[in-house]
Length: 470
Image 1 (tube, helix red, strand yellow):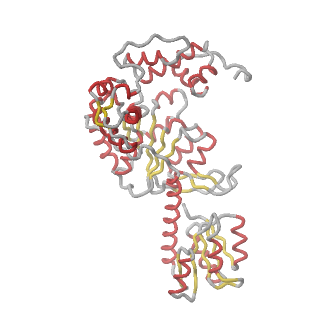
Image 2 (cartoon, rainbow, N blue to C red):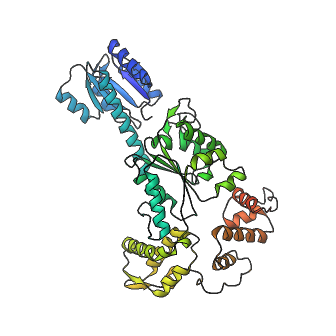
């Protein structure tokens, strides 16, 4: 609800009471005053979204207040109200920053039109402000590939996109789950409305509730102004919950309410806000296992998994690799200004033989590195790829203290990514004598993540070291 708090600044008590009543009937918070000084006092205490300002007031001109408001960092939309309107006056007010211009007497329908325009304009501003801070490195890529697996995926997207159903997109890291979500959005009836992404894994646990649902001024230390959450920004459009399995149980319970009732309350607030959003969610975990470990709510899983879409790993549609390589080469030669003639047969063979545990994202990064290292007018060679060993070469003997050689050997055995991850974690834990704190530091993950992984494998390490040793 982009417009919530409104000031009516009108010295005519009949007009003021009438307008105040109309706005309250539409469930707005309204403060009605008769002087500029009283309005300024209100705005000094709180932020308002809209203000109706009469031109002629007992302590000054409403047009002077209009110009003053343009210098405020949090300025409300201003609707000028006058009983002595003229074209010249209207033009001057709009030039000075007025949102609309009404001539008394005005009808209820005119107020309704003005409020609707203000709602749409305010939400558009807030969505644009949010999107301007978004960095999306993959937004320029489409779902590439002509294999049967990718053709089936695109057909399923076309079928599901035209509905309003909640979709759970599952797949390994780097397979392109977000690209699937964007394709669902582009081909849906909501394509002209906002598309808001929430990276659940990147937001600190202490802030994720505020990011989802927003907060009121003073809700917690540092909440200096009211802020709309991502669900409110996505009103009328689509929200993507990226890596939804990473959110805490407390937020899961509130998210379940939004999915069931399509309503929420901001942190620190008591107003129930209705939202009309389509929810898409992605995860690279097996949520059924997370449910068994009591890490993910079963009822939330059922709400999200209305239409499941599985994105296949790259190793299951290897026939797309040459096409992907060609597309990435063309993109990165243009981006980096390198003239690459082509790719050598040996280099293409190495690319096709690689296991690609990081899937399409890993392939894209490898090709970008190869293009950068390749000389102008030359073909990409195997050396440009940066592979430690050839996919067909025997694995090197594990060095003492090494944590990478066994993983490379495991890749050559054609193991799946989860099995490869399990081997690496258990190897590092063994070399740390079962000490979870030291093993987590070596692996570059949190102790909590390591505990969850060990619980999943049915393995227990030693108790954490003392705080001093940590």
